Structures are given as C-alpha cells and as structure tokens.
Image (cartoon, rainbow, N blue to C red; front, side):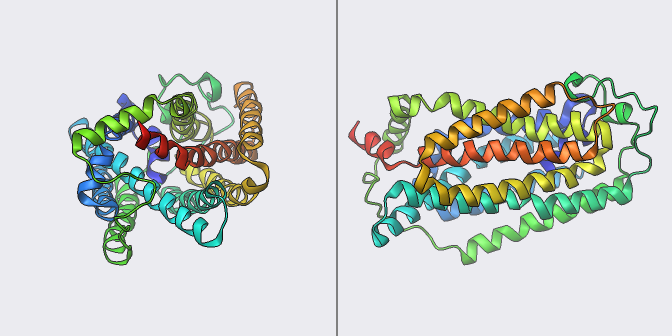
Length: 359
C-alpha cells in the first residue's frame, strides 16, 4: 500500500505508475468471478499464500521499472488479488458466523465487529510502510519546494500533464535510495509467505451457509447469478464509487496534493496519518455498528466525503499549509472507512449467500 501511494509520483513520466496500478485493478476485476473456483480447488489458506507470492513479484519488478517488467507483474498481481480478497472475506465471515452462534449474537453484529478489526490492521499497515518510505526517501532527496515554485498545476488543477519534479521543484530520489526502499518492502512481503504457510489455520471444509461442492461451471454460474440478484445489484454503484475513491486517495491525492506541493518524500508522512485515522475509525465503527446499524454510518460517511471533496476542489496550493494535507488525509480515510467497512459487512451478509444457494 505504501508503494501504491508513491507510484504515481515516482513514475510520473509516461504514466507508468498509474498504468501499472490500473492494470492491477483491471485484472483484479477479471479474477474476481473465477475466485470461488480457485478457492474451491486450493482452499483459502493456499490461495492467500500464492497471492502473497504475486505481490512480491510486483514489488521486485520495481527494481527495474519499465513497461516490459512492471505491466506483466501487474497482470500477475491482479490475477492473485481477486482470489486473495475473496479468501480473506471467506475466512472473516465464516469465523464471525461461528463465533456469533457460540455467543448467541446476531451474525450482522459480529461480522461488522470482525470487519472493524480487519480494516484496523489493514489500514494500520500504512503506518510502518509509509514511515519507512518517507524516512528512506527523505535522506535521498535533495532540494524541495521554494517560495517561487510554480504550483499552478497542483491540487484540483492537476491533470497529469506536468511531471511532479517540474511542478514542485523537488528532485527524484537517487537509485540507491529507491533500492533500499524496494528491498525493505520486498523483505516484508517475503516474510508474509512463510507466516501464512506455517501459522495460518486452514478453514474447515464445512460451512453451514455455503452449498455442497459443485463443478467449476456451476460455481461460475452461481457467482453471476448472485451478482445479478437485486440485493447485490443495488450495491454495485457503491462498490464502483469505493474503487474510484481508493484510486483517487493513492494516485491523485498523493501526486497532486502532497508530492506536487511538498515533495515525494512527504507522501509517507501524510499517508501515515491516513493509516492512523483509518485504523482508529475502523475499530470504533466495528463496535458502534451493533447499536446504530449501517444506514446512519453510510449517511455520515457520505456527508463527510462531500465536505472533503468541496474543500479539496477550492484548496489553494499557494497558500495551503502542510497541516491541511494531514487533515485531508484523515478526513479522506474517515469517510472511506465508514463506507468500506459497512460495504464489506453488507457483502458478507449471510442473506446474500442464502439467496445464491436458493437460485
């Protein structure tokens, strides 16, 4: 995630950074319908282990970033991402439902609480990753913004035409610094493989909600039937908006607002605040959902995002302060977590899977 935050700034020339992540999410979408088939054959545990390997391949290709290395690695990672998130969701939902039956609570409340814990760790991972990226890049970047720097293409005026180095006046980190950064991230990613392989318990093959084993073709048909069911179909606009907002946070916000005005070395520090705010929000929401339900949380998230978008649209990069960026990052993740955690809970609703079984 910290590498994703940097990609649009590090590889601004030619749009390689954004192109690689667009490729990842394109094949992520393609891999989602076939994820149930892959999970059925490999099991959730080994799907997660295999997906971790695809992430490591992509990180490794950043040592020599070209369209011939990064794009194929992005295709591979995208094909692993769909099964990865499907496996994580299966683990989370099944564990939450089992616990709900044991402690006699509603499935929705426990699933929401589990999602809160999951997204807490998911977003908190931005803290060490972004701190390392900024500390490493800060030591390897010379120069920075000055009073006479042209910021006319920063903020809402950014259209991707002006490279970050030209608009902010900051130099690109030297190659040795980037190697240290990529090596650190690759080491962490590689460590995840044996951790998942040796310490993660496989999911029991029996689940009271899911149907018995079916052929791969039947699995695909069931997946598409579920996607076209009224309950799921009405969630699709929210899912699309969620993906666009995540792309904006990691691609446009980091490049147009942070790197363009403060330099690439500041991205990690600001996005650390993004991770802290998101982690705390996710944990808190997982608890209060039991008392409020989803609708009030969705409403607050929507209103906070509208206020933030208005603020960012009229923000003046010439007179903007660094603390403005920290505030934007926290507000961005707060609204995102409100929406994403509740969306994950809605997608984990057992009624959706029961509907799929019936059809």
